[in-house]
Amino acid sequence: MFASDSDPFRSRFVPFGYAGLVSLLLAGCTMGGNAYVNSQAGAEATATGTIGSDEAFHMITSLEQFPFSEDADAQRTVLTAWTVSSPDIGPFALDDVYIHPLQEGNYLYGPELFMQYMFGVARGYAENGGAASEDEAVESGLRSMLAAYKSMLRADGDLHDPFLDGLDRIRREGGLHDYIVDMKRNR
Image (cartoon, rainbow, N blue to C red; front, side):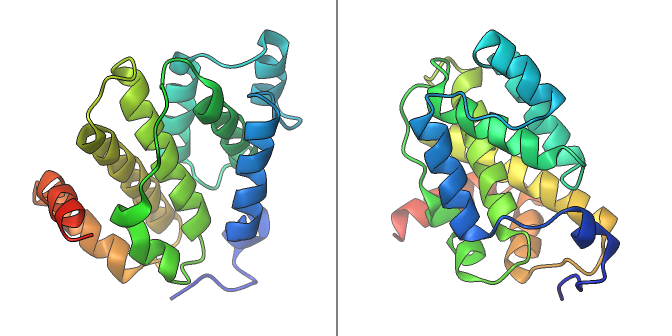
């Protein structure tokens, strides 16, 4: 079930949609890590030229806990720029095979959760100086996405999604690593 148009969370936070997500990612890539909006985080990042990984980690955690905050869109913009430009991450290809059902579905906040997955993967690489295994980085991304999803559910219990609920059950049972291995094997 999805939030209605009269939902107070939806009126405060409009989903990007996948078209908006692509535009945001392209802006981050073409602006060399300086694609910021008018926010405190954006102003601070613009003043320094970019944000560091410690600040990015803080923002990722903030989005996990408060995905509907007033500055969530600004944080996503700053984090997108960090993801495409940080030397701490190193080059990586984002493999969406692990969250494909989310992208195929019509979950209201699917694009935001996709971005949270991307930020979590980037954090997984950055925490290890770009040397994390793909599996470690993907697990970091899945955990970040699920943390944001659980926060969304606390805000609105009607935002359940069968794929995300199943993936969270796998996480609670300690099976994320096996899920990642199985998904890679069954591509």
